[in-house]
Image 1 (cartoon, rainbow, N blue to C red):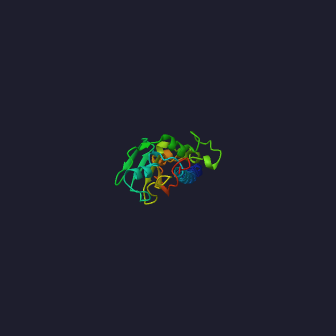
Image 2 (cartoon, one colour; image 1 turned 90 degrees about the vertical axis):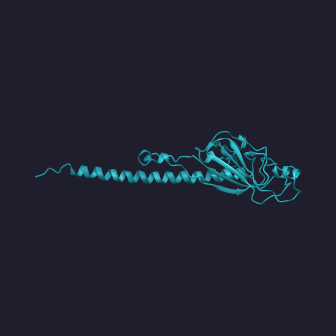
Image 3 (cartoon, rainbow, N blue to C red; image 1 turned 60 degrees about the horizontal axis):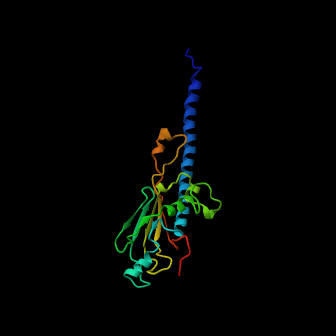
Length: 212
């Protein structure tokens, strides 16, 4: 007669292993979903700040006056321009198809306002929703993870006191998903959060009231 006294232990070991993988996998999935949602909310907050603050591409705010003084009459439609600033390289590039400012430069202070919030240079210290920055929502976001673009889409006019009214687009890059349980097994550490772009129309892209 065969000895089967250890068969139950073997069966329990196999079943428990499968159950733990499913349980930890479910927790991991929920945590990934949480990171996705928080990153999306952080982009939304950053975009709202960018719409009413100094532009990361310094020189964009004065573009409507610069164009007015050089070649167009007051009230004419703004020519096309697109300026993209990368927080990772701390540079801004300009897509020239019409008229584009020549004095574009990267404004690290303006990017800091978007990332850390108004009047702050660190994360998790916001005292109100007004002072909340992107990293107050998702602490792993740094300037190196943010790309912001200012694109003229037909709004605004030359000579507008508040500057042009470009469409602002913010996207994330190179932000890894964090894994606690199955990272080494499923190679989650190699997965990046998608670009997650969001856009809205700028209001007065300045941290101060426009001068009339």
